[in-house]
Length: 461
Ligand code: ADP
Image 1 (cartoon, rainbow, N blue to C red):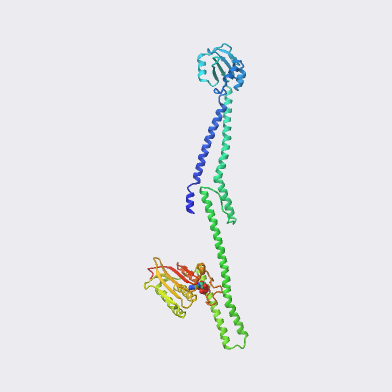
Image 2 (image 1 turned 45 degrees about the vertical axis):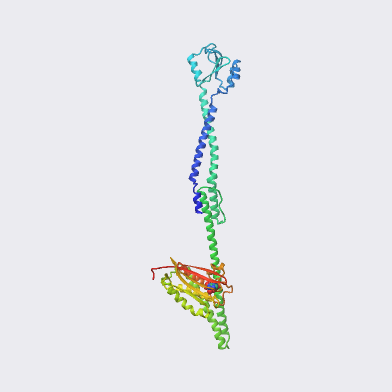
């Protein structure tokens, strides 16, 4: 997932914002250019030389319809026109200040002819070899410039607003929409809707945030499921404890009442009843002791005293105690414990309890003439003990859950073996308290193999 994050991180919001700003900059430049073009189109000289329809225009002039000609050119009303011959003499005029026959200064005309000053425009009419002089009064220009300027500003403003709207929409799609989705998603999750998954497509940090929030929701969901499972487990544990403690107590109560109700009871029957009461109180007592031991390990304040232990000798002593039981059941045994010292730090009493549980289980759950083996060896970091039998075994699918309290293979709760169903749970807790681990490999009817690894401590002993 984090590899994915890294890949996504290549496109950043900063990079995206940068490209947005570049785009915005280009848009503004284009708008300015468009406004300039619009302005020049608007303020372009009212007499467009290129587009001037000379034939038509000359037709007006020829007919001396100067007013029509000026109108055709959309000239202001106080503009005037004069038709000059090649000597710059006025031969016809519309609203002009000069009389027919007036001759313009040569130098003045050359200036107008070649430069077309701001207010005077000249056209040489080829066909008639005459010069047309058009004068646009000065006072029209300021308003024309102001109008042109206003038009430019207006064009610029309209184009800018339109493109900014489009730009905002484009930006929103990439940044604001994902943020809205994130806010909505976080609200949903905040309201306890942990199945809600945030969806959007983005290539920047917002995508990282989306993945992180979805991941967080998944984790919360898992935590809740774990909490529920542990709560169910706790309830089941209480039920199991109640059930297992109720049976011996009910028996004790029943036989006590019988004993006190019966006045004429023979010794043999009384002793039998007393024996039943003793067995049941032993059972109840063992259960309470086991439960106490188990709960000890769940208590965070519990500090297990530890000291150096030489495991080879320790394991040999534990095994020796079981030899009578193996012989009683005609079980073969194979012991592989080295002569060398293997040291660990641990609590002898607790470890003895753990190994006793495993060995006594092997005896309990293996028939006559089966084989038991125990071995000890060391690896670079651990001391490894393997306790193995070829008894009734545990189904493969139960090798993890068998370490839970009160889990037994036999649903009738092993009445014959008389265990509490807490032995393996206690063993596991003890091993874990030593920073070790216990793994079971087993198959039904083929036997069990418990592998316990404990951290070595070479300098301890
Ligand atoms: P119990 O007091 O019932 O023996 P444990 O926690 O020690 O409780 O064991 C739990 C269950 O695991 C047992 O009831 C038994 O069904 C199964 N079990 C444990 N050890 C062995 C074994 N060596 N072979 C077969 N089954 C075993």
